[in-house]
Image (cartoon, rainbow, N blue to C red; front, side):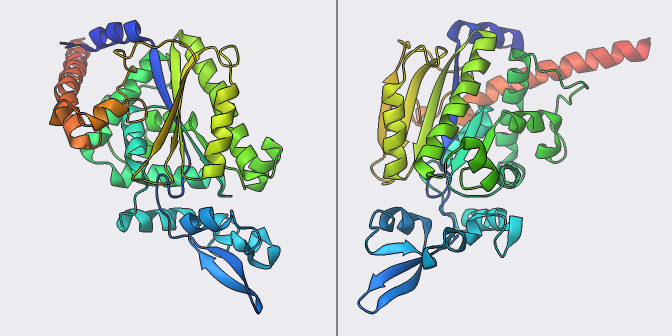
Length: 357
């Protein structure tokens, strides 16, 4: 059994794998109440019809009978940008409403576990919000949705990664989490390294050099992979990346991209997992292993259902289930308590020495 932080690091070094994730937002992480203004062909002409994001994913395939209102995308998606009638409050407002109504998407649990594990992630959405707006939404989830136990676990994991990556915050960091989490320098530094990409945002669209949603998402994912490849290379670890989306067109693009990748493209990324969450009751998972990975080895800080479908479908016990976080927390609680106690004991001894001097 691992009983100290130093032992944890020694064990981690033997495994050498890091997990990273890229998520679509709408109908994947959350089913948001944001409306798209469309028009449907009728015998008397085009009539206005408002549709949800899940409905839009279906009707957009039928270009003969459906179009955005007056053929003006800016009007159709006005609530999907910070320039709409509700300004930059629309995203967080709709997100909070979705959480209150518990309209969680099929990748919600994966996303929450990703946060708890302290894994870097990218939000790659067709929305046009500014990156800061999407980040505010994630900060709200961290500050208001995560339980104390989940926050403590997340903080412990972030401290471990800071040590592993030799992050220098230029100031002494608190060993115990206090106040509002997103104000904490460790949390801020973590989110600084994550990507929040709304591909319909004018600034981001110009940076990506494309206006096509599928192509833009593909390019954003490539940019994230380049970052992850460098991160892993810097400390001599290998990486695995999971991507999830509920739109068939986006999934097809990403699957084609992954199929055509070669080891030399991103030499430190050894495994890609693509999840099609269009049908939550029948999630399709496609995996590509670029380099052999021993299945008995997990990532440094756990893994989610992205990389452990067998455990989810055939758990050996209730504590091994991946779809109920409370069972995972039970398994980790003892280790976290011991590590936290070790840190506190060291701090107390340090303070006693300082007082005596």
